[in-house]
Image 1: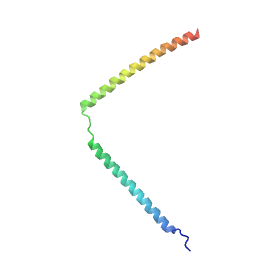
Image 2: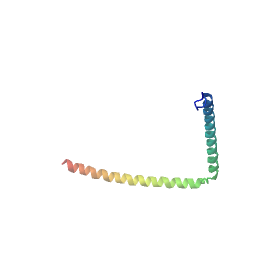
Image 3: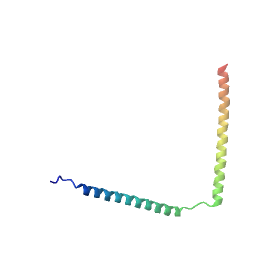
Image 4: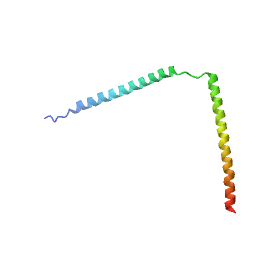
Amino acid sequence: PTTGRPSSVLCNWSLEVAEATTEQSTRSRVITYLEEVRSELRKVVWPKREESINLTVVVLVVMALVMVIISGFDSILNVIFERLLDWAGQ
């Protein structure tokens, strides 16, 4: 008597084929992705050494300026709060 369901052997075979296809397509996608990455990296125009040094100096100078500004605000706020606490404590 057939119940309309495939036999367990057929089900197992179908699952194995599906897993193999999924594994192969995943591997294929990874290889394709890596090939595309390599292709895009060849198109990149890398900066010259002098340009890299100049940009690094700019970043360091801006960072130092921001550090001075933040330190100044911190010092000002520190003095204000110390005076407020002294005033409130009296």
